Picture 1 (cartoon, rainbow, N blue to C red):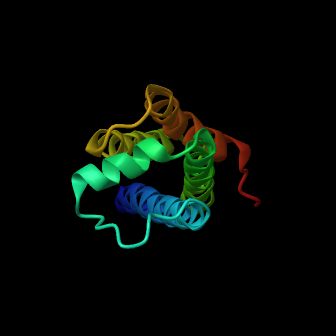
Picture 2 (tube, rainbow, N blue to C red):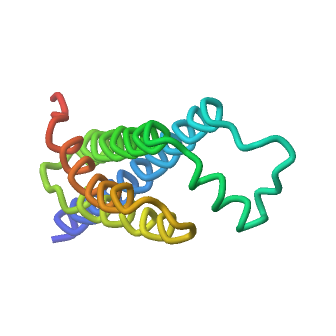
Amino acid sequence: MLAVLLQKTSEMLRKIISVSAGLLVALLFIFLGERVSARLYPIPEGMDIADRAAMQAYIDSLPAAAFILILSGYFVASFFCGAVIRLISGSADNTPAFFAGIGLTTVGIVNFFSFEHPWWVIITGLLIFLPATLLGFTLIRKKG
């Protein structure tokens, strides 16, 4: 009985650690993707990023390619989040990846509604996180 309880606790702990690591990897990829975008489409020199009106004007001036780059980064980040969860959890149970995808979607909602974004960016963005996380989880097989 104790052995079963310890095994279940170990599995649960491994799943919690896998979600934490997956989300950390996703946030790292998102950060890197946004840095690349910022280099390609820099904020105007001297602009105060705390000035909401100026930031909104900057966002409004961005070409579609800038948003496609960001959305691609979200896909890659979510995919690797799912892959890391699969590798660390060692389980075929996709529940941890599902919750991580929902968490990333929630962060995306906050981001998309912090400033106005084009409608197609919001819709596409909200549809990327969960499926890409589950895809990364599904395509990675733990060896052994």
